[in-house]
Structure formats: structure tokens, C-alpha cells
Image (tube, rainbow, N blue to C red; front, side, top):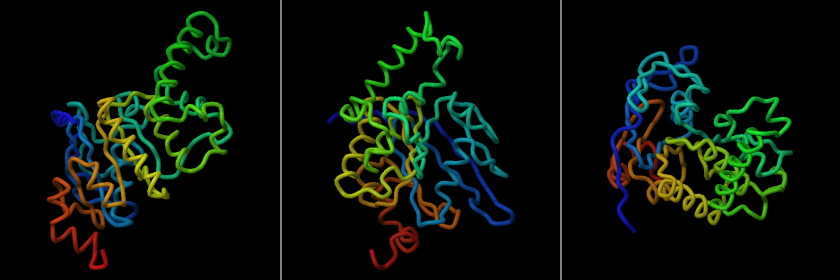
Length: 261
């Protein structure tokens, strides 16, 4: 396999601190993400991992620090602005439309890119119809890519959990993000489902060229698919480096791996 080309810094997180009513969720966190890499954020439960993603994609407003994405620096961005700039996100708790089909769920990820007005869309006439056909073609490509062709018309609520997670990934990919934030994409999966999802994450990174930041608990998965890892514990950064560097970091071993691992 050809060595992939890691590019320049696309996301720079600087001195982010976040508190909720006196409780510190994040304290002075800094790290960067390079274009085309898979960057993992790990740490025990309550370490601040999801809070960090929520700062990046505009759900939370940090009290201190700044985030630079593609050269533009913000102390705060709102979620719509983040999506428009090219940051996609999947969620730990699936936020899919359970009664809607797989294809319609993934189509919702195209909303940002649909130009025609709602009236024309509803009537499906003229430019709106042509535009929808183009978007559907793109969505069909994602469905093929994720190997869920057999379930295109199935209501998502009827699918097993592992496939629902795949649909969630598909919806995020439909936005064509440059940076994709994955919040525990393999939580609750069995070994086989994890292997499938790991493969899709690597394929998204390779074939779509998407930069990926993921939160993951399974250390085996992290070591297999990540280029670099940042480690949080109680809202502080305690490690940052390649999987090998992080795995041999004493502070990380005691905080995250514990003696039982």
C-alpha cells in the first residue's frame, strides 16, 4: 500500500478551556490535526473527549482559547457555520430518522448543498428535479461505498445497530466534509462490526481524502488505524504522539490502561 501523504495543519486547537458552572470539563487543551490524517482522542470516561468535539463543531462555547480551521481563527463557531466550512460529525447516540429509509436519511446530509428553493423542490420541477437527481447519484455512490445497497429502501429503525452506525457515517459523508468528527463510531459493536467500521474509516480517509478525528475506547482499534493520538484525563491533556509513543507513555499507562490491562 502506498504511504499516504500527510499535509499541513488543517485544524489547530489552542488553549481551550471549558467549564459548566464551576466544573472544569477541559483545561488549557492544545493539539493540531494535519490534513489527511486519522487523529484519535482517547481517555477514560469523563475525560472530556466529547466536550472537545462539541467545542470544535460549535455545540459548546469554550470560555478560553481559539480554534483555527483552514487558516481562519474563531473563539466560537455555530454548528451551521461549521458544517458550511466543511466539518462533518457523527454522534455517539444515533440521531437518525428511524421511520425514514436509508437513502432518505443519507439524503438529509445533502441539505447544505441543495441550491433550489423549497417550493421548486416540493414540486420537483425544472432545475430542482435535475439537482435532486445529481444529489441522489452522489448518495447512491456512498451507499455502494458503505456496502448497504440491499437496505436502500429499508426504514433505518429496522436495521441492526452496526448498520445504523454505517448509515450515520453515510449521512456525514453526504456533506462532503474535509474534516470528519467521529464520536465513538464503534461503541456497542461486536468484533466483526468493529473490523468493518475500522475498514470504512480507513477507506474514507484514503478514497475520499477526508481528514478524520475520532473518539474511540478500543485501544486495539486506535493503535491500528490512527496516525497520531491525543490523550485526555479529567479534562487535561496527558499525552500526544504516535500510537507507539502514547502506548509507552507512563502517565497514559497509569491513567488510561491501569494495571488490569
